Image (cartoon, rainbow, N blue to C red; front, side):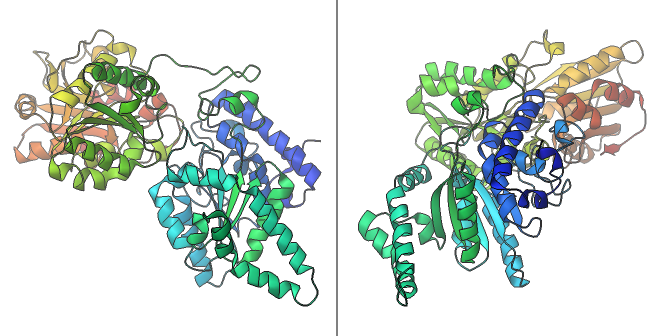
Length: 621
């Protein structure tokens, strides 16, 4: 009998025997492999937490007790156990269930989690609210050894150990995040893993003392109070988590249900902040993912029988990496920084060819920017390759640690614009508004591979201050195959009979060209493609004033975007024509790029309909 099909809520899990839970774990792995092979998604991380997820649902009373999943891409088992098994085949599809926790989707999803290192702070807030309300429920933060390297995780840990809130931090230690972990935490966890002899001795001594009549329990309490000094004397290396105020438990085998259930029960009984150190294997139960957890971290699909992944064609990330290798060949000052995204940003080849000039700083975008600025201060040419959505974390460092000194760093901003599948937390829609507020910043927006290489070269050698080059996920659009890039800040395609000018940038240039071609027999249209989107070239405004109507299509946020900035400038110049701009004014859920553009009125058909209109100033949501 299939067990998973009868699981509608965590209450059903709590009624299972150990044998039934083992069978459930097998079924969960099978369902995840089946679905991700078709839909794509995060495979290795989810296969690694199957037993841990089942144990959490067994031991805690959800949703009164709460689980906060860090990053959240390892929540597939959790979704399957909380009433969403029948909808699981819609995972990461438009209108389907999210690949990340979503409180809008289920009461069992406690917090939107798409970025790393946030779970402990959020869980502590929930635990503190419980304490103030006299509520004795537990809050569990599940965080990986990669995510715990992030600065916000340290801030949460430091504050969480101060009081006696019912906070349990489960450290899921799989010895890697997306790429190999770096830094102090990785070394510290390695030292903790080497101490099972101490853990076993502590348990044996405690049990022996407790068995002694009359004096046993007081003696064990005395030993507990002195355990920190004892460990320092024997190992000269106490757990940093205990120094922060947590009761440290572990390491525990994360694939042994008995050990997990026992450890979680102990953590509950302590009624104080606890850090439970659990060791797991990414990709557990599926040999291709177990042997290559980085490749199967996030996949677009694969063949279940062979594990062969579905690889797309050439993409902007690859081109960025290749271009940086070309520049580095003739420039020994060129260095590249990434924040645990070596493969994702196309830098694997650069890391191999120039290991002394490649720096993976872990999940630490704030540090990466200030680190790069420090390099620039001493004469190097640093490039920080980062996803648009993760760059948001480093606004303060861009402003105060870089722009104020006018230090020259380059931002290679990957995944700019709509990003398919991963949903609201991963869309690259907000970098232009916040970069535009920072003085001494230049932003380029290439539309093709060749243009990306050109703009990276311009950013490194022909600009000062912060130079950003933003480009989308995936490949270039076929409609641009004949387009020849230019090093000029904009390109004007004039139709002598046109009264309307269409403006855009980035990959939307492809859709604009197709829409204009469809309408060429009905209405004459001119097109302006912006190559440098900030600051806007002064010549742009002089050209615009030659037209009666201007329509701007932008794959980005409305407020503070290029279209809004251009509109404000036109008002200052008392432009007498009509100005319309069509942008994005919402969080965009999981979808394909094509679906997202259509939803936002930025696909070819929507553009054709828009350009038929003749009304005046519009701000379209």
